[in-house]
Image (tube, rainbow, N blue to C red):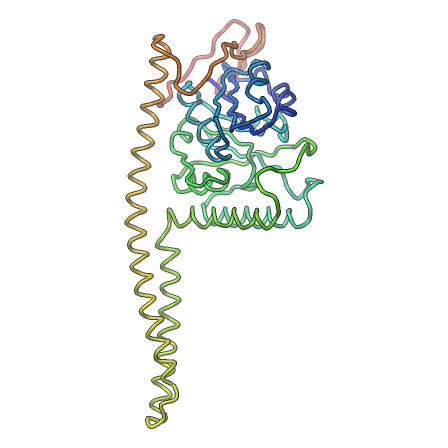
Length: 366
């Protein structure tokens, strides 16, 4: 079983060496570990340092494209290189490398498709009271929108099985954390929380400049992702609300008119009521159109999933036959990290094997 650790980077030269040094060189049940750095248009020589540190693969953008694009490019690269499990971690050494073994264990055991590191944000010392409340509230909203038990929705420390990585697509340019959870819930993927610890804060976040921007942009991501997959619920609620307002105002006019037919001072209620009912019909049509588009989107994503799977298989076959390198991926030639000689291996049922005996591998569908 091959584990890939991807690290999106933007001018992380100061912290990358410490992050790479903290990564585990072997994990029970994992045959090999490889590190892939995605350089998102860094100007401080991050990619050059990654090569010097001996990371196995580098993907580099000539200009900054954003965290969501870097994350997606990393997933595509790992799949084409033959990853069975993909771990995403930050380059600023926020997350502890020792927790990676616990993060991948539910996937290796077959209990989960995605695992997310739960930082227990209420206990993080450098988080302000407002940020803790926002984190708690945001995770609650994502749980309701996705139908998943995720505890820390903004955590970037997560692992994905190959099956999950094939089906996850990011449509926004801000961040992948929230949208991929909502999409995973829509796809019916199993998500498990893994309690982790974090290292002391090394720098301020580069993803947002203020709490207001954080709430505004993440709120827009949640709303857009929810509307992508459940348009009828969103627009249907608004259509019903407008219809009830219009019907209430119409009934008010009718009641007052019957009380005094000669008095015409309540025509405003009738006009506003009729306008609200017309708007409700328009919104209902939008809900119907949105549902049709969502159906088409599901079919398109199914096609993209199959294309991504075929592309990964073709790329792996071509590389194995020596017919060229993986397009867009620079492999440094560093040997994958493997368990040391004499180190016990662990098979999926938890039994330890003596040195020299290879575990029997089960055949996994790509």
